[in-house]
Amino acid sequence: MKYSEYSVVVIGSGAAGLYAALKIAQQIKLPEGILLLSKSTLGTSNSKYAQGGIVGVMHRNPDDSVESHIKDTLKAGAGLSDEKVTEEISSASDAVLNDLITNGVEFDLDENGNLTFTLEAAHSVKRILHSGGDATGKGITEGLAKAVKSNENIHILENAIAVELLITANKECRGVIIYNKQTEEHEIIYTSAVIIATGGTGQVYKYTTNPLGATGDGIALAYEAGALIEDMEFIQFHPTALALSPESRNRFLISEAVRGEGAKLINKNGEEFMAKYSDKKELAPRDVVTRAIFSEMKKENSDNVYLNAAIIGKEKLSKRFPTISKTCKENGIDITETPIPVAPAAHYTMGGIKAGVNGTTSIKGLYAIGEAACTGLHGANRLASNSLLECVVCAYELADYLSFTNLNTPKVIDEGIKKMIDVYSRSIIGDEYDTSTLSSRLKNIMWDYVGIVRTEESLLKAQKEVEKLQADFKRRRKCLNQNEYEYRNMLTVASLIIRSALARKESRGAHCRSDYQQTDTVGQHSVIDKLSEEGLCYVK
Image 1: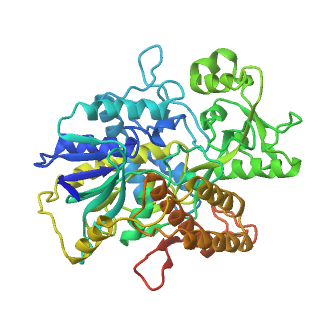
Image 2 (image 1 turned 90 degrees about the vertical axis):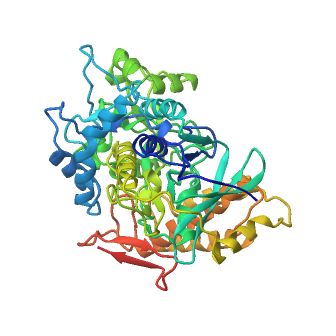
Image 3 (image 1 turned 135 degrees about the horizontal axis):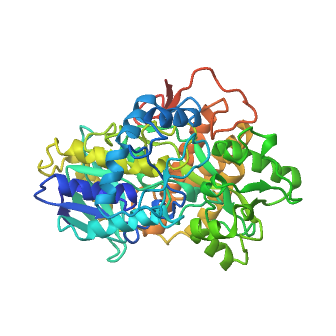
């Protein structure tokens, strides 16, 4: 097998991966450079499709403070957000956002050339920065991608998927095996530091706002390598995704910011309904709004409700939400006159690889940042626009951490790694699986039985069905192509979500059990340890 060596390997090219590669290259002199691995093209990620904005707790905003942001985050997190982590990320916000601007990221300015701060649900003050009106993720990823491409110490490899981590007998990560889609061959990459920045798991659900690549690859890789996985039951379903028909599965996001600007949710009779569910109405936390919409849809036996954005005003709508206006118009909806059909869709994974703010995991040499990581910031329900902030702050902190780490260690090939390489050197016997049909089956199972409202019965049914899919799919390690690897990873993360959801016999944040509607007095995190006899346990 072909092999190469790099000082650092970054897997994933969304906001977290791009910024980590850039900051490491700027701060550390690396003899063998940085490899930035992208499963498709550079910058294609969940980050790119983030619309509303990024939290900016900045000194130039006199109405805001770190204390206020911490309070809002902890409240939304339903008792599971880590206060120390929240303070660390919030306190770093000003320096990191200014650094993004220095590195070419452009945020929207007012007529006086000042940054504009807007309001989103569950925030007590205007603290959201945006780019291109409603294309913030695109603005950040494109700005960072340009800077990354111009840095000669960063080597970019597109259309290549990481398939297994090289783990030594003493549980250190010393590289990764990849499948190169262009050559249709497997390759070995040796390194001292592997950074997982692969995003979330939305594609395991029938309806999602996530792009096709969000198949939980990094979480599955880390789990199989023996890393601790935390809080996988907490899947955030965004309340408002464009619901043109039940057949439209990959759904365009209608940003939280639209409700922040005053849009109202209405039923098919044109009646506003959020007052029945929360005194904050449309600006309640996402889990509350999602369940309210779900309840209304069930009550009316309908596939969607509507978002009346026309009340915002024609001029403001076109200026503030050009992307949403354009996409809706392309689908025959003039949002200045017609309510937008919306329904919930899987949007964000609060859980993931247990990691510190600096990206460190339970495995030496393995780091995780962005949506693939679980730092404790989001708790049981992510506060709007905290995700992009976490991506860039953790990338920034990881670069600092690695500047004090020995990244010049030689490659290691012990017996365990030799056996692993041997597996990927052998030919596969058997035909290619119809992963399109199999993935569709998995998505339906997860949506029907592990969705917005769960029960013991539905979760056990899902577990049985997923175990059957796993038994029928014979590729445990080496696969024939990228589609098979993605399906393998989807099965793994689906199983992790189900196991965690079964174990949590309470309702908290995004995890709603109709058979356990109480919220326990003490909030605990679910931790899955593949290498432990217990398998899954709870920690405070």
